[in-house]
Image 1 (cartoon, rainbow, N blue to C red):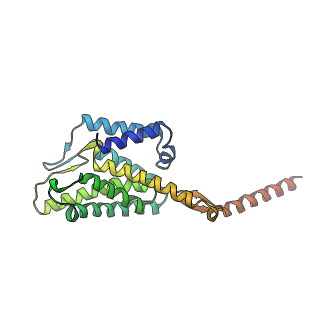
Image 2: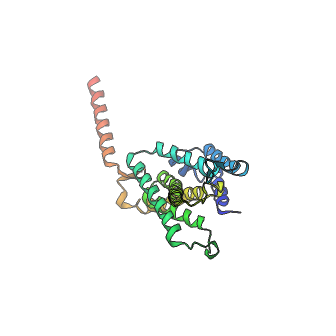
Image 3: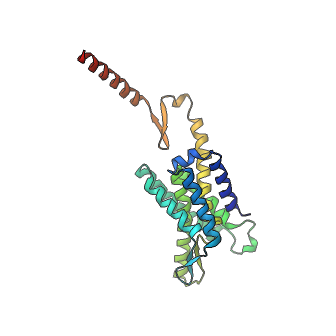
Length: 240
């Protein structure tokens, strides 16, 4: 069984066990919606073949359309413009890193590669997506879109050099680099993010709370609540 399918199965188990509720909340997804997306990716991968745009360009529903649609949804749901900018920058950088690794680092001959390069690209995309995207949403967006950008770069260069190599966006469906990168980016963001939150939640953060991906001071809220209580008491006294 491929790594992509294993990841999808693990995510499904976590959702059914209720262990992914925190992540789904931050992704603005319900349990049912997440399971429906996973089922759609798997079913479309099995039953729907790649759809050709031109002779050398095609795309897959489960490996490209569904994860891209989810990335666009999360981008729209992002809390701040800063989060959106981070996601875009992370996606562009991830795309450049993947293409650079493919072009200049990994050996060109498949038989000389000890690991499937698609897994290498997914891991690179996930790391860059988390480091620059920061939030869970930003990490997923950057992971998915970063892989698509690298495919676009390769397609453009092939056209410029008249190389008839095919470009398949999400061609492997549920086991494609696009899907794996998005899932790995979110898992990495959750694991590292959770560890950082626990480390930062000590005495240095006792007057702060975690909100929208970062710590915010609660002192101002306390002052507002205190002022509100005072105003209410004054109002009661005035009525008396």
